[in-house]
Length: 243
Image (cartoon, rainbow, N blue to C red):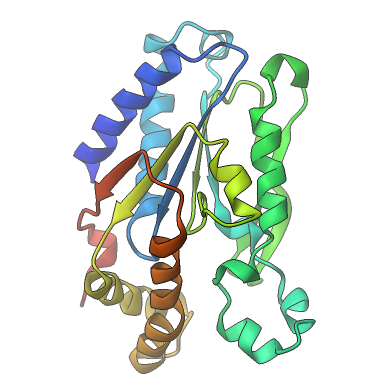
């Protein structure tokens, strides 16, 4: 994973050098659950922020402010209260993670705000929500994207879905990266993660959740995503040990 992150970081730094100073470089990373998209995104952001001061010539680096920001799509989950209001609340909760259990319009509005010229934003901050695993609900305005953040990496299952309203955001991304992994390997990683994080009480429940919710969501993504600009093979990571 480290080598992949290093190569992609160098690529983005080159792209950023050729990006107008009043514009942002927006990267969407999509992949099925447990493909490693959040790990990759965070590694890249850390690497770029660590070396940007010596490779970029812009005001942000002169003041040692980070030029890259990481945002996860989980913040646009609908709240449990909103799921309770669905015609079939049980189905909505069971399928939490499907595209229709997210605030797609809110995500599109966020990407549109990032696409505005930085000069027009002055000192304004564009906020993204985060997700509290303790509360099992999103937290509004938790992640600030400042004008000095000229690269924003957004990772999540539906970052460049090809259906409305998601497609409007997909068209605004400069890079659309899809992390490729087999359904079998994703399941092996997921069942361990679900038990470890408390999403499932045991392996049987974790297996059910993987096959009845995560796998169908992954198939839906593969069948309905905007064409990626890059396909990245998933790399085995110690965080996803099978045992």
